Image (cartoon, rainbow, N blue to C red; front, side, top):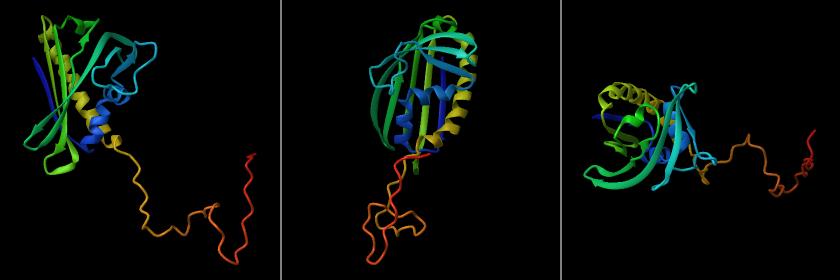
Length: 199
């Protein structure tokens, strides 16, 4: 059984790809509905690199345990007619809890520049599940994925907030404080040095 998402997000594909590999960004996608906590003593890694195995615990609103899950990350790139598509595949498996009754868990997320608008991202997801309880769990997971889609739209604009480099050709702001290291203009009196100590 499958659950699909297809969205256009307000961030570029590079920012979306970085977010896919950020445990913090991934955890935020489910919050506050679900909470994701690390099982390893060292906490979550800073990045979900290809080949990583990351065990986590899931809970409903931090109060009702939903079991443990192993995230296993794989990356690949496909050259498509519309441009390159980068795909992260989580082929981990639920370890405990209701989802552990599933025999198949295959979650793939693809990002590429949105057609006609490279400043935005075409985001596609496919979750494939299988096992004796798949039909019972599918409606619950489908609902969770709709929440996930809503959170993707909300959070994507925050993924690309790198400061723009200053334009060296831009005129100086006259209201900006003077650089204390700059030499004083001829005839100008030197400003008193600021104290290194604060009250």
